Amino acid sequence: MENIAVVGSGTMGNGIAHIFAQNGYKVSVIDINEKALEKALATITKNLDRLIKKEKITEDVKTQTLSNITTFTSLKDGVSGADLVIEAATENTGLKLDIFKQLDEICKPEAILATNTSSISITQIAAVTNRPEKVIGMHFMNPVPIMKLVEIIKGYKTSDEVTKTIMETSKTLHKVPVDVNDYPGFVANRVLMPMINEAIITLAEGVAGVEEIDTVMKLGMAHPMGPFQLADFIGLDVCLSIMNVLYEGLGKDKYAPCPLLLNMVRAGNLGVKSGEGFYSWTHGTKDLIVADSFKRP
Image (cartoon, rainbow, N blue to C red; front, side):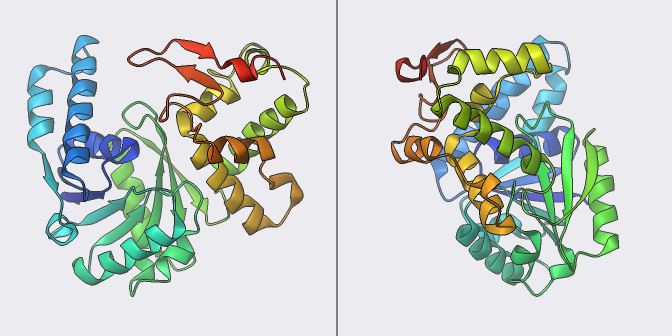
């Protein structure tokens, strides 16, 4: 593993590119939008500067990391010669299937194709390729440069050799890989998302307000942030998408997304990315102001 291609330059994509480049890999970042690529490089640079300020890395490491990254707007050019391709596009099944069909056609035969999906079946994704044994899930946590966990998800036909390779590759990034089987939501989101959904139900039923529920979970359960703040960081659209995958895949009412979550997504209140979710977010600061409509149910 020397050459890595990352498809998608959003929050997860630029984070994945960052950690591979910082650990000596040559990384191609691919996005159809040139401005998105510029934004990704700016984000990586900002995060590297933050690490320098904390004395975690040196200026030389920053320079080398950025020199390891090349951007492309052409998928074919970007994945040329890649040993490992990691798809980090929007959490949309149709889009991911289309990307993997293309990757299977244009990547070299020995290339491993990975997806950063947080809930979609690896087996389903692998089935649209002619190399299902070389398709695997690498579910990084956000923010990627900081969070240690990587869920490594085997599809039905993923080979043991590929699984071992990806486990070892993850360790070179100073991550902790965990071997997980291909079930809806895997482990992280099968446990996390129903908790967030239940918090939203608790709010909708008038049991307590946003701040109160978040405070209970932070102080009572030692969570670093409450479920509403976390949901805003993840993106309420992503939360809804994962809940739908759980509901459709497991067929149990307990996974049905709360109508309040559905309505917020329909209204465009997606959390940090839109500026307002369960909290109102001010630009350029982490300060939180609880949205008036959710202070009291």
